[in-house]
Image 1: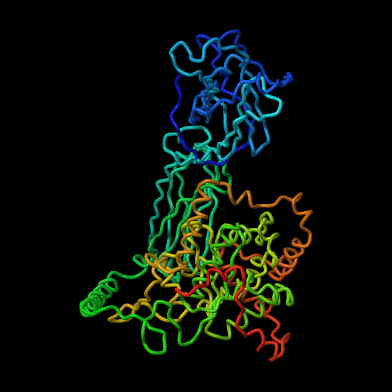
Image 2 (image 1 turned 120 degrees about the vertical axis):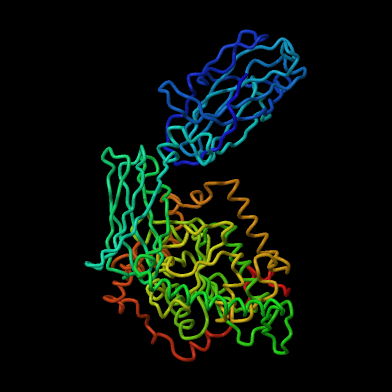
Length: 628
């Protein structure tokens, strides 16, 4: 038997019938008697256990690409099982294999009918039976079941396994039609040419790139803080395309601009990979004489900094000690205890565990007071989600405390839902006693965040081991995004309102860097939680889709659905959604800033004093809050 090599896939699947590549199972093996192949329409009668053969065992499965009758490469799966040697082989009358597509509920069944005269084949090896050329869909999960015939009455002699087809990032299958229809062979060769028209005082940018075979339309955009422009262009049988942008000379607030091309391939549609590049427009806006003068100035400044760095290299780094007696214990205490409100999405139970472990680490290792909805569910239930969030936001904005926004796939999906995409219902939201807190939080805080005076209050971060920068909603792209735990020390300096790098010294806090945060018990627990979720994601590539609830599942969860509806009511306060354009958000604030003003008269001073009291330790993380 010849099998294709093992391949991996990464593409968006379109459901099709479960079938084979016009190939039949191997019924021509030497030594098989009366072998024939049928479907499974005929019902068979079970026999007593002593008259039934034992169960088979798995050999291996393989994935690959084969060419079909239309000369197109398709993804296929081969499954092989082995007949155990033994006396029961004389009772064997055949085998049956069932393959179920868990994504579409389609099923395929093949039944072998045969007799074996010997326990081994003529080559003195155990009998093997393959089912080759089963056409499979990328990112689908298949349950394969095999059993020998006849089956026993009182015992399950079936063997089962689940096979998940991975994605299309393997170069060996980039020529398959599905990969090509997702842009796997697209070589964009993107370039950007900048020129200045001194008479018109305009900056011109010409973006050039190569068109792809399966994408007829493209959107080219230029982004920079305070500016977003995009243009659509059609291929129209051309192999290369050019798009021109014009701006007022040096009108951009920053030198760097992000250029992005969004293709629309026939399979991935508007969710395709987008090439990006960064260009520097300042080199074209400033005259050469200014550049020379600036270079001389930078040379002098560089010399001065080199001297400072040389001096700093001959002394130990300055370590911040926030304890009263100037000693840096492992679990230090801050002179002024900081509060941090954490905003996040309940994507998955394992991700919720990461958030709780982070809270324990902030509280025990960093001495920070953590405000989390799960840890204040009693007060939240009394006030309601909107009032609780508004109160916390007002308290933080009137102090030096911070709001930490943890971005994840759920955060991005819910933000897009607020902007008009399909509504998102996560399973963990309906299990939580507080429901979906993210949607009302975004509705309340995004308008305040995009005000320049509010930037210092908000910290945006994500766990790069289980999330990515693509999970950060567009409004937060105009500020620093911290990778946790790699940048946790820098993030904590933000919480303290302290600069890490100062002239002549580098401030450090022992035990907070990405390389040693896990040396204390709470840090180790956080590390283990991150590793557990990362391993789960590797084993379940479609974990996020599995957490989404369908409408039929929502009917049994009406109380939790009311929480989402309250968030939707708050979302309606934003009259037009803050979408991919930061400029659109800024213009909205100028015209409708009053829409986002919170009611500050709803609570008296006594109530405010009560809410400022420290939150008790919730049982969810009490076990993790051990001093380091």
